[in-house]
Length: 71
Image (cartoon, rainbow, N blue to C red; front, top):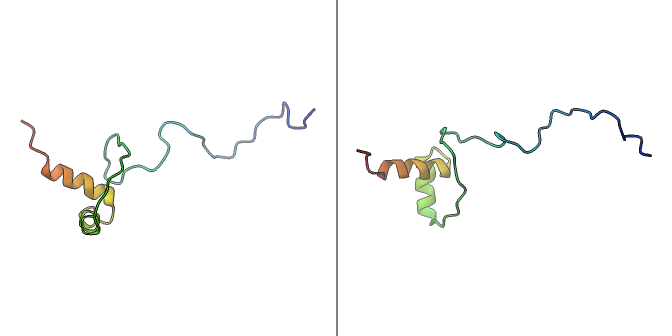
């Protein structure tokens, strides 16, 4: 019989997988989806600058800028 069998579990403060885990978007974007894109170096530099150093934010900002206004 194992010594740990039946013993109470020690709480370590480390959460497991669950809702709300992971890094949050710095621009408070809603639900995000992971996609893979292929970009040239100039586009990466431009979009990263547009996103204040964050490529994903730059892509989202660019998409917002070219999105037609909703009527």
